[in-house]
Length: 136
Image 1 (spheres, rainbow, N blue to C red):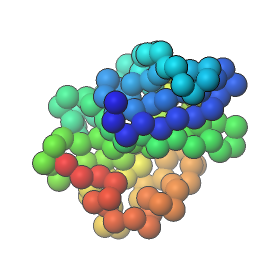
Image 2: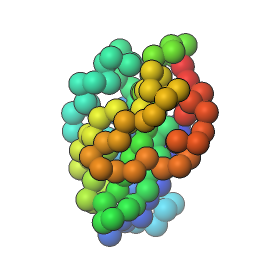
Image 3: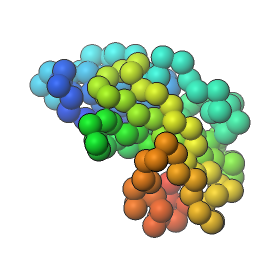
Image 4: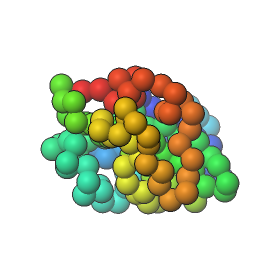
């Protein structure tokens, strides 16, 4: 499991990580985890433009305005063609995430970021060098 992010939900804890379309594991006690599928029921089609293997990584999750936000990177190893995607969920549970598309890519990182669905991009993305978030 790589780059895990754990959140607390009303149903317990959920850990999302790199691998398997943002693999998910659930736990009631933060000690014993059970594999619970992936964040998405079906991987978003736009991933293929950045990663032939449809394997996003480095999910970061927060809760704002009554919903969970997940930012994640999509790229191929050694490639300069990368993107940061956004997904939202009311529950944070595996399979409940709705893709909101690309919020930034290697073409937009040098200028302004495209805003998606009226959601503000966290300052850690807008004020971080692109290579810290999206690298091949």
